[in-house]
Length: 63
Image 1: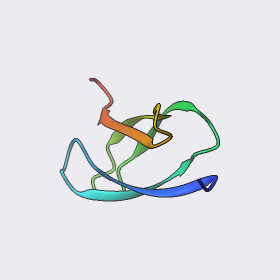
Image 2: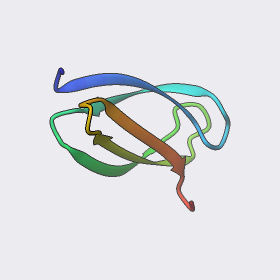
Image 3: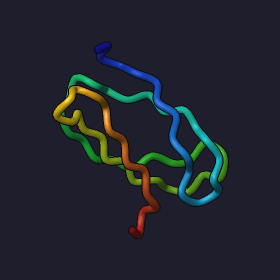
């Protein structure tokens, strides 16, 4: 798996699909990034599951 990987997620506010660049060299990370379309803050939880696949959860900041 490459250290940086592009991943498509749906914004929990506006519903648009946006592409984010993720650092896959870290097993677990949590951060906030603004939607490129509506500019609202999305909370990302990114981790590698037992199968070695990248799992991304994108929720609104107040969830």
